[in-house]
Length: 366
Ligand SMILES: [Fe+2]
Image (cartoon, rainbow, N blue to C red; front, side, top):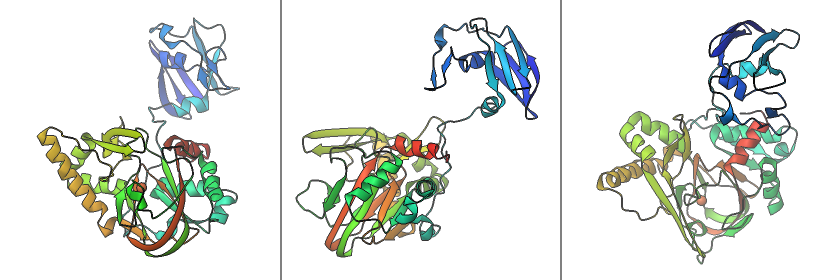
């Protein structure tokens, strides 16, 4: 309910559902939802904002009680601009449209293993996709159980969220232990916790890993919450944390006819200070000579971070059974695998981060 409209010099004030709010005139002009300024079908702004008078103010304004909206007449617009109460309430305060639900950082002691499991049959049923997304947003990973052991199942999960990302490895992938491949993911040695695509400016957002066959000993999957390591470092070793948030680390993939290289801090924060991405892969870290102080600070950071990532108190370790599919947030959770002997066949895919976020918004979770 809109009331008490007062038109001031460069902003207006009013009450929205009993709460006081004010809006700058320029913001209101820029965000007018009339058909000349805004295409409501494409959600695109038609207004040429840079040409609007910086001192613009409405000629007239009033509250229309029948539609519970603010109506403004602008000097450069022939039609009235209507701002409904819900729209004004959404923007009554500064906000962050990129914000996702806060993660719940975990370690081995705090994670309830049952909370990450979801039966594939339930995933395919009504409301199954949001259930998977909730696990990903909260814990950074999920295990789909009883998944059909074929690429169609991987494709189906990927399509329910976004689409399979094509990389230098192709789209959908299958692999077994194979000493001939250049990448460390193909050996049966222990694979320490890492994130994928450190050499990509836009690292894969989600990874799907389906256990197709397992006739082996060992080879348990390892998940580590990078957000938890970041939080614990910040509390216990703030200087190390700040160095890891500051010093860019270069990832490299060289081979198979490509030389991919990208750089970002291990703990990347967005402009609001929120942890946006954890990037860590000691295997793929490029040889770089930094200034001596930064080099030493980076090594101290890697020592602290990687020792925590390899500490069992930070690790969820679990041997995937055939039909188990790990789905994890590659911008938050590190993954690894214990050494194994025998045969282990996996299938999987990458998805883009933006499609994961889009799917969460589409389902009303962000
Ligand atoms: Fe990996």
